[in-house]
Length: 363
Image 1 (cartoon, rainbow, N blue to C red):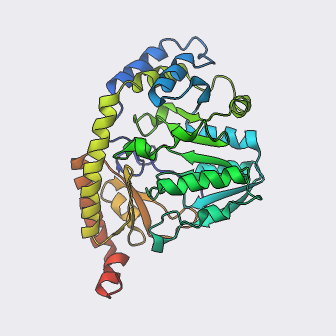
Image 2: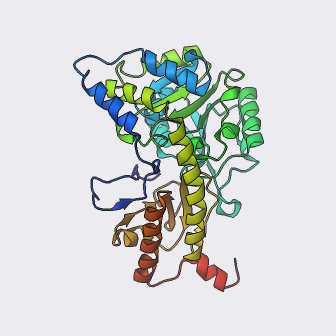
């Protein structure tokens, strides 16, 4: 990103329907809110520095040893503590992608090599990516499915990347924060490889899965105990509040809620893609709880005039003006989004690039 601007800015735009942040469309479970409330009654005390109940619950949920788990004040904190613990000199990163990787690496004065995801390839990671991992590389950051594109990395390609990293003694960070919204998340996760690759770290978060972004709770999975201990020394000891810890334990019991959100997202994602295509947008193959598409410049501002906020992706590194991301929400909300897009297109008084290309016989 050129600027560290994110979606979800309801504070400057309180009256808009927010499609700019990719949050579970079902909203925060009541049990999670109740648990956070119980935690508030305990705030005269320090939080549990060992996060014992939360880590036990996470180990049971993820089916990994407790020793593999580290918790953070959101996944973003873990990105920073990991980079500070490793102090890499040269990183490889596919762009466009999540901003905090770049921000953390730059803060540690790490040189960043960019691998540009190309539109002609649907913004998918190319089979040539492993070749970019060399003895000069210290760390690789990948997001699967990627943010903002929602495109999945082929399973066999991740396996090849893991082996290439092992051969060249390179650390791999794989962000799986959005796998929960895939139709078959267990087929996409690589946590089964953790014991085999000690220089491998998986990022996860409660943020999107349980719609609890405001509590800031993320976690990482890694089989390298020395690294995890070094990361803990990079952060202040009480980084997870009592309300966040209590809410996290409660959230992990919400299995039906997660399944219902996954089914809803899959159904509404198909509908939204079709409707955006009907509007003339170029829609890409997102598998997550958001959709990445191309349209006319100025569309994000124009839909705001009709009460809806989408994510303008022009500040992502590697993306010019005209690329957008929208969350998948409840059906009636999604209908309002499409109505706002249609109205905005009339306001802009121009046809989207994808529609113009179709008429010119180039699509």
